Length: 432
Image (cartoon, rainbow, N blue to C red; front, side, top):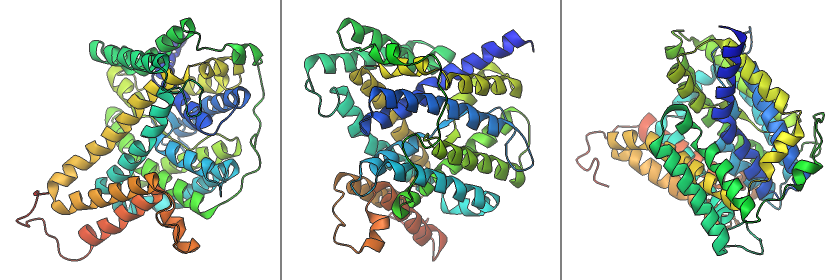
């Protein structure tokens, strides 16, 4: 394959994941109240880290690298927990990065035997966790569609109209196109919505003009990390769920590439994700996991050459040093961003539901596990003070909706499916 064709295919992979990659820092930075300079840095460092994480994973070494044509980006399952940690009065931004570093180190340590822990994360558990995370994110999307919490023109007609026009554009592109264009429907919606927003006077170009042409990345840009037990447990649970999801991507790619995977291959893949999270925490980025949209692109194009992904990773790293390009993403009007969030977060919820439906149809027990775990997880997210009177050592498990729902799902799965008698043939099966 010649260099031109390889680079063209690499750019296609970059575009397929770009919207998902930039949405994460835009959502988190907006929720944490970052200014335009901080937002530009956050977007730039995230793009660069996507490239580094991809290069670590596509490489096949002795200790790291799955050696498959896989592209990595920040997992959306980390968005809600990161916002919760950053906005918690008793925690803060330095706890975010301490928890990301610690959870990455934990993943690297357990990578060799995570295969044995997978049994504690069957679809009924992972589906419940993903559903909780998606539902917990919806208020962020809707607030942004209205213009952003605290905005002077919150819920104004122009903000709501711009948000829904953007959402309609995304839906129309998704409905009436196929293949690659359909894969970047979110990106197209963001671009068209921003252009419309500019005509409505809702775009400020000063962050682009103020940004430099080139900058050096800086470790601990937002301060030295601090390590909070609840935050570390939260991000470790997120990392576990991400590893389970990544395992599915690994096997999907191994099937496409006709490469059989063994436990050592999986361990190297998990270790790469852990290492990427550690580096991400040091440079104040995020935890990283496999992007499934790029798997679809690999299947669609039929190109399995790792050289293409190496170029994709290199391009992402290069973009991370160009703040003007990162600043371009920060000018997206808040209602436009909110519309894209609604679509993306809705897809997170349906992904969780897709995991849950088959296992709930298998048994009434699984339906009950999901019902209680999702109900409790979302409930604690909505009413965070419900367990405020419990001792502090218990609040590690109850103060965060995602942790509470995840632990509940794990315990109930053990109780109903791993110990004691099974009730698959219960006459009440399915009658919920």
